[in-house]
Length: 136
Image (cartoon, rainbow, N blue to C red; front, side, top):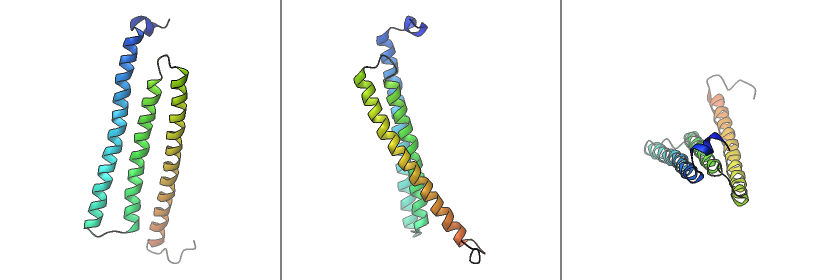
């Protein structure tokens, strides 16, 4: 027996971990929600200012993508916590499936963020003073 198992009965440990899972998943949901509200506010502000440049929308999209990636990481942490105490094979299988889906989402979001960032940087260097004479 581990020292923690001697101190806390398994049912109490399950309850404690259940609370931690809810806290971590709530944090992830809040991060995603805050990111969505922030991105919407930026989108409206850009529209009101009529600065509807593609670069502005790409910047907003990049920021939203960062919030999504961070929120998904918290959600995955909650899933891992959920299986911390005596997981069944079904729970392990569900965790594997969820982890695979969320990891794929994170990978593709991260790749898209990097691609958008590179395009924005390319656009900035192309419009920089003296960039006309530089070879590409």
